[in-house]
Length: 152
Image (cartoon, rainbow, N blue to C red):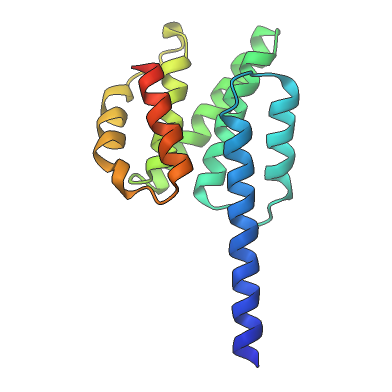
């Protein structure tokens, strides 16, 4: 009986995590960048108690997304630095995580040159392309392929 309860619990935890990461991906990869989108991602992430490294990276990517919605230059730069640092820490923890490297890639592609955050574009692109087959989620794989075509 204990095993059955544990099994059901693990399935529910896995399902909840899968739903959360899917929700965050769906929101993050919608075309428009607005404050509502950023706030929605932030609120979903806030509800998740035990974030894994990928979710941590999405919180950094969301900070970078906030930059597009803010007019104040100093506040914009603060969000930029915070987001960049979070993504870099996530990559330091998991240097072979394709999704996190993809988040860094698309953010570096979208960063203005004067912010000097473009040094990993080529290496991330090569890494992502060479490891695409390892991605289990077809939806994520298609999103990556679509984005790579758009940014190349």
